[in-house]
Amino acid sequence: MQFQTLTVAAVVVVASVNALTPRVNTTELPPRASSNVHVPALQAELQAARDELAAAKQRADGAAARRSAVEKECRELKLKVQTLIDKTNNDDNLIAALKAELRKAAAQAPKPSSSNASAGGSRGTVPRSGSGRHDSSSSA
Image (cartoon, rainbow, N blue to C red; front, side):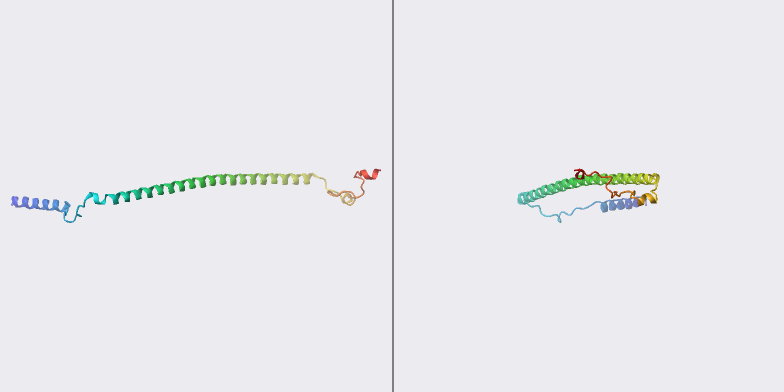
């Protein structure tokens, strides 16, 4: 009985090894053609592929150069925009300081009286009497 068990186990092992081993059917392989028949066609195909590769490399190099130029221009434009923003902020600060100075000056300036305003002493008006002007043509 021990001999039969050993034989059955050996048969099972051999069967599993045969199931795992790939088998090549030589009748399914294409017939081997003469190597000289396909060489010119393959060489032409290889040359066409090389030409296509060279053209693709050239297009890729052109695209990379254009991308680089656009990225550089974008960086320059961003710097210019940032400069404009900085100038605008500076101008806003200067305007705010000037307005504050004008408010301070207006608060410190004496208020004109009503009699002074009616006598022509208001700001921004020129006296009509001509006493404040020098006219060289009337001295003749």
